Image 1 (cartoon, rainbow, N blue to C red):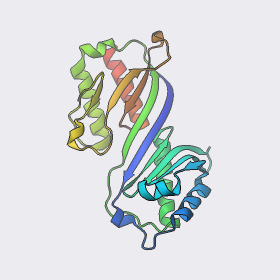
Image 2 (image 1 turned 120 degrees about the vertical axis):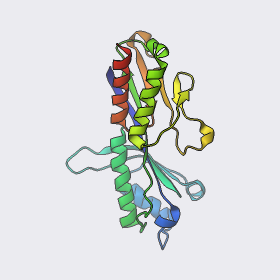
Image 3 (image 1 turned 60 degrees about the vertical axis):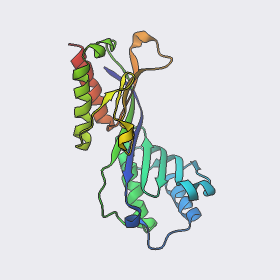
Length: 220
């Protein structure tokens, strides 16, 4: 298997508003200006939308000591959490950690008392050595690999079921974030490349390991 690109990696952190709300809330336009100044965002929500629905910042960067700046696709700030989208989950983790630390130091946010698990998602484009038709003949083994990968990341068991040629949990059971796994042929790529667009609720590194394991299993 060959990794063609890591398209996106997302890290999401929830918190309890009552625990992190500053004692003296900053004026919203000033908060947005400070964030733009620190991260160089090119776009953000207009003030009326931000006041009602949360703030979306887009196309920024985080300067890293002794390294290249990390490109930030977006940061969404809500009353009960923050979602960061970069090109890998490692980058998203670094940006999210910096954003939360900056919020405490510069915006008088309080560090959360209740620790809530961070959620992840990654989007990869890969070339497999062969087609994926054998997946249909070994459903049970694939199902087990999917369940184990999620459990390693979140220490939580979920009963995944087939959804098109994809796996997901029952959405009516109230999962907070999307937990769907999918492997789809890449649009506008010749079939002989065996190029697929892959999505999983995992860190980028763990997602790549899962795909390698899938290919090893079904190439037997």
